[in-house]
Image (cartoon, rainbow, N blue to C red; front, side, top):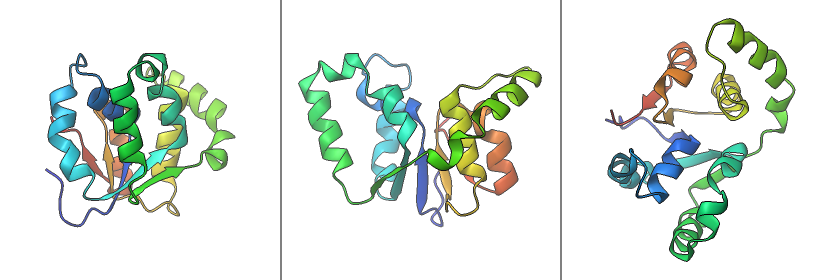
Length: 146
């Protein structure tokens, strides 16, 4: 469960995909987390938009209305990725050497989690293994609902 001290939640693409896609295996879980997530300040890494605002969502007017409703809320903030892009290739090579190659978006999210100037108190994701090491290192609450 989400503790009361959490204020700024970084939200991974998988949450948005599950929230808006009824066929996604984590759809009901995303729905259960929705009210709690949106009672906090939601930080959306800009690259996550590229992952979840795909063609299948753009063809569904009800999804577009829901995205509009959520993203005009004052507590939702898009986080630019310019500061984190330069380290992507190095991080990609390093992650591949550990046997777990992460996507560019996941690498940027990990870089954001590592950034002490970006005040992140919690991360919402269903891909726990991709972010658990950095969340442990920085004492960031990992919320997966699982």
